Image (cartoon, rainbow, N blue to C red; front, side):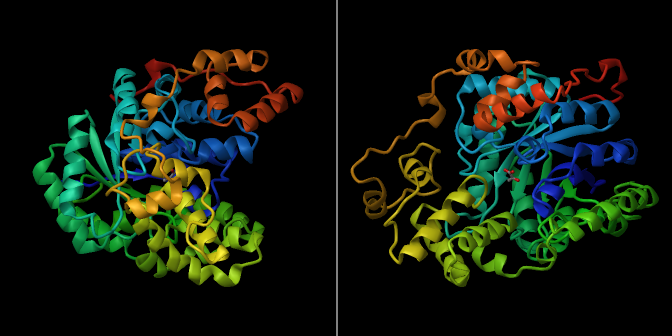
Length: 465
Ligand code: PYR
C-alpha cells in the first residue's frame, strides 16, 4: 500500500468536459503559481481539444499558452493528452509531423505525454512513444476503456503488455465515458499490476455518478495515480473532485499528502469563473447532473451534446432516444470501437444518418468508409463481410499501419506558409488545422499581436523528469 498521487486536470480535461474547452490563458495564469505549490503528481494543461479551441474560438496561440504556463509552473510536471498518430486533430498524420509535434511539445514545456489510440491499435502509438522518449519526455500510453462482449479483462491485460513492450513508461486506463464500475476496476487494476511492471493511472469521468466509488476500489487495488479536477470544475461530465478525494484518503495508507486549505483557496479562485460561464450559458447545468443513460449506451458526455446539436440542426430532436439506441448497434456492426475521439463523432454521425434516413448505411460519411477500409487501424474484432460490402463494396481492406501509407509532409507545409512563419511551431499548427491556422496567422499579422517565444530557463526547473 502506498500514497496515491494526483493529476489535476483543471487546465485541460475539466474545462474541455464542462465548458467546451473555452478557458482562457488569462484565467489560468493568476492561479498557476498556487497550483504549482500543491504538490500534484502532474498538471494536465495541454492537448486534447485545447489546441483546436485556442485557435478556433479564443484567438490564442496554443504554443504560447504552453510556454506561459510553463514559466509559472516550475515545480510540477506538465502533462498533455495526445491522440496517437492523430496528434491533436482527427485524422492520421505522417510520421515526420508526429515526430516534430512531440519534440516541440516537450521543448515548449511538456514533461508527460499521455498517448492513446481510439482503436487501441498499438501500432498507432509507436511513433509518438519513440519520439517522446527521444526528446526526454515520459511516454504514458492510455488504453481507451469500453465495455462490449469482446472487451474482457484478458483484452485489457494484453493491451497493457503490448504497451509495455513498445516502451511505455506508465499506463493509463482512460475511461472517457465514466462507465468503469467499482468492482470491475478493482479486478482490472489487480490483474494489470500482476502482469505489468509499470505505474498505473486511472482517468475517469463522473458522468454516470460512479467514478468516486471506482477510484476508491482502484486505489485499494493498488492504482498509483488518479485524475481529479478542482471542485468548481469537477463532477458531471468532468472528473471526480480533487478535494473530497484528498480528504477521503487523509490519514490512511493512501494519504495524498496534499493540503486541503491550499486546495480550497484554489477552488475559491475558480468559483466565480464557473459562475460566469454558467451565467453566459457555456456551462449547461445539464452536464453537471448524473446521467445514468451513459451506463446503458456508453455515450461519453461530449458525444451526447454533439448528438443533440446535430439533431437540432436537422429539426429532428424528437429522434434523440432512437439515435441513442442506434449507437450500440452501429458499434457492434463496426467491430466495437471505443467511443472516443474521433470514433465517438464518427459512430454518432452514422447513427444519426441511419435513424433519419430510416435505413442502415444508406448514407455513410467518408470517415466511416475509411475506417472500414482499415485506414484508422484494426477494429477490435473483424467487421462482418455483410457490413463491409454495404459500406465499401468490394474495396480491399488495408491491414498495415495506416501511417505507412502517408508521405513525409513537413517540408512542403513549411513552404506553403513561408509568409506567415513567426515561430517554428507554426508549421505544426498549420499541419493540424490548415484553414483555421491561416486565419489565425492573418489575425496575428494584422493585429500586431507579438508572439512570446521565451521559454522557462532550464536552471529554474526544480524537479527531475
Ligand atoms: C480528446 O481526445 O480530446 C479527449 O479528451 C479524449
